[in-house]
Length: 141
Image (cartoon, rainbow, N blue to C red; front, side, top):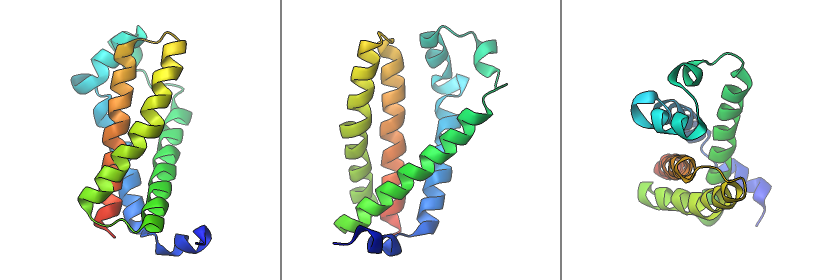
């Protein structure tokens, strides 16, 4: 198997849609009315501090790059494994989130003594994000 040749089998429109979806999910997930208040509370931030986006341009750019990287790699893995369909893609994305992201956040935040509430909010975001990315990529295969 040649991983480089598998790059030709990726649907880049699906990758673009998944990337934008990932970015928009972050805005919705961390909105004050959804999980933003609990997230800010776990970090010890007031609403005013959480709403202040001054100086966060780099974080917003990194969020977009992160979504693109995740979409590309899930698309590549889906192409290599010949997974197809929305449900199979969604399941694959969820497994990736659980195996890599949640386990990492669990022990990083455990050693950092970060609030378990923060770990749950961020881990759940990762599960939903990668499940959506997998579903979108799977829908285009």
